[in-house]
Image (cartoon, rainbow, N blue to C red; front, side, top):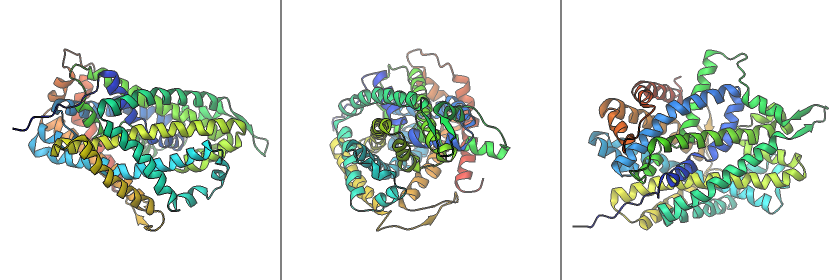
Length: 464
């Protein structure tokens, strides 16, 4: 009889929270959250996001961590332990990080490239409008930076739960928080007078960010804000992508799960809010309201111009910002890769090294293909949400717009109506812990979450 290998675990609540928060705080928090806030009426988006975080986000976060801790399995096998007929949810959840990892590493490579420009004081070339597009359509530099980024992620995963994920999360997360706060405070002190003699200040930009603007907002507009906030929350807190199931499986039984979930919520929402305070005032000061709606190009197109306009301050702030971005990206890609590796270990009983090396080969090949999607493998594909994309966009749409809402919807049906919420409540209340949001959890998992996710799915298919 084969001897069962002892499962790794985090050393305690702090290790788990740092790793989970590291997963939650990624590129989505740093660029997508501020962009959506600017697009969706500033404080309106923030208000909706916070409400969803403490209700919708809390429910899915609690559910997935509890499933992981109860089963002691990665996402691929955990769901079949809950109910044999619902094991397919685990497979769908496993597919999400499999699709995300290669293109996330490609974007991580872009971050490393820009960081290298600022570190070597050659950032002036990044100010040109065409620089970003000329870089990503080039070859082989994007491939090289993607592989460098991925190698760092892979090494941390191969080191394991304690020596890799937990150790580096405990180091990177506090540093990231401090740097984000420093840049946010500095952004609010900025002031600039443009060629027309109009003076804009960081505090004015902060007002556009925090003060709700309901002017001209219809019910349909508000529903779009709700869907945007919910879509952002999915990626932001790492639910419906196997990560929290995997991390939950490493959580010690004596750790207070409810307290850990609260801490993750605070970390994630706090960093997202600070990211907006870091970016929006600075962009508003030097680029006005138009600059705030730059979307995905905010980091790689708008911000280099902002840092250039700052003069000497920009030479300090620019590299500091891309260091923050690199830290945030790495802590997230670690969790994405771990969700895949832990699944292979649990399903096939492979060692961590073997599982990691198999994922390395896959992710490296697919990462190269993603990079080539901007040049040699370029094509244009119309997507159901009305946009046109190539390889990276198609992979992003499949994972974020279809699979993640579907996994969340099926999970809520499984827990809310098939095995019933008591299973999760029992796991949360281990050690006689009082589940303070128990009533809210039951209502959310049975009714609100499935309805919201069904609407989100309809929107993803272009039907709403």
